[in-house]
Length: 65
Image (cartoon, rainbow, N blue to C red; front, side, top):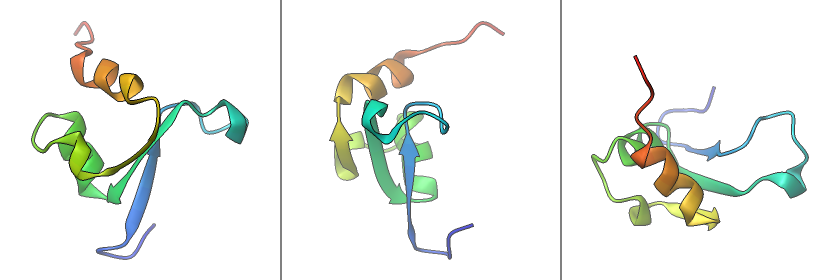
């Protein structure tokens, strides 16, 4: 678990996949990627590597309940 205020990375692919297969990563403090994925802060306020479309799809995704 990262220390308070430290940076964490949210990968958009399964953890067991090859590093080369990762489509995108979003970096910020522990709560920032969550806020960005829930539309509470702009994703471009965080460090984004790779295909931004992956995160746009996650933001737009509405799973059936």
